[in-house]
Length: 634
Image (cartoon, rainbow, N blue to C red; front, side):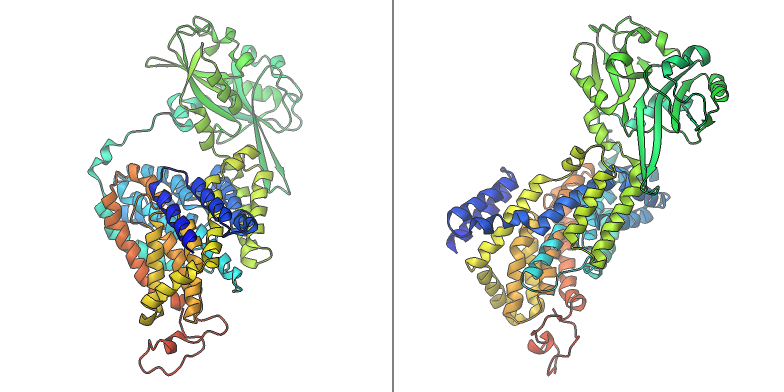
């Protein structure tokens, strides 16, 4: 027991210190427990085969697909549009929309997704974003209590119950608790959020680097862009672009060829984009995106029987934009663009030139480049990334490697929605285990093209979190084997047990909540779940309310900017101080704890064999002589 307690104390101290990565600390603790003989190798590494760890890994991929396809952004934007400039309505929409998305996507991903939407909406409505950003962070955590997959501690307590022979928790078992905490959060934060408004909001500056939409607007790329689809019987089919001589005949240039196909009974939509070269061949179903002489476009359409597309916009699925600055030493200086071989050698199209305050769009092929010119270029994403390797001719502005991660595959949003719906149905109906449902969904997101490449799916997984959880799970086994869990639960019971089960529930909640301020909520849930279960068994009551107190205490941690990633995410953008979190987050954390102490027995009445009625056992009702089946008790 002594070694286990020392390892636990040092582990927590290193987590609080924060100088070492948390996953390294957890692995080091695991190795010490093996070398000391407390855990066998099989017990120590059992966490890496845990269904919770596997499920969380798959959830990272599914959540990444929802973000990559723009599904979450589209849902958020639609709800934000409903605010119509009303500050109170905007607050309610932020809380409800974020909570709803947070039920299925990690709270960190949800908050990262919603932050730019909130800032933009606040700017348009003329009110301070600082009123909304902290509630946004809290709503991401509150929404995690709506479903089994909403937050990792939910999965931890469910597995703890099953490990000890109790029925596990279903997908929507948490729904009543989630609705309750969201209601409490809204009622408390609606007036309190006004105290968060900062006078410094006018000094917000735009981040360096332009978005793709910024570039399109600045260079007016879409103003003279038209699309023409190629029908099955057009005589342009099979011809190479070089043979069409479109520049001389019609005064136009094809910027992009896009082709859309549907598979799997029309449910899966694939879009391919390609930069045009002289060897590009026109195929049936292609959409030609052209710029140049308007009359020439109409003449080309008439000559080849092409149909004009409506609502033409640039897409950034396979193709992106970037700005290049021509260096004084560049071989491009004083060279015409048509002679520069940029398209042939570097596979880029030049869409515009910024020369000082002047923007040049016309007759680009015959324009001579000058030192300091900024070129807006279009290319396949991998070719844009390769431009960074050129050091003598130009400098790439911004960060194309970061921009590509923000370019969503929005045409895949319906596919991602169907996959997420399938995952939820599989979990709710119990047709397969939750971990299996998640892995099916994760695999489908890859196979249906919700990511540009398989590596993108792997990159969405937070491996530090996965290793941390897998390495910390066996700690609970060590605590049980050495009697630490029994000792901690006995201390709680001896201190609070005589005061009744409600006091014990409160003690578990606030103890868990306190520990979560220093280590991750998942690690805390892993440590406290067996303690809560043993405590419930010692006073002979059902453990469900006690384990729910653990997951609530681990997830509802608002008193520090460093207790959860979402809290830290909004700190700088909202100009918050540490005191702001204590002033707003700590009271909310305590109110939820007090409310849930009395509500959890209502939501989770006695349901386990062999446990008597708590109201009779602890005389919580005056004059009660015995329990009644179905009464509300932990």
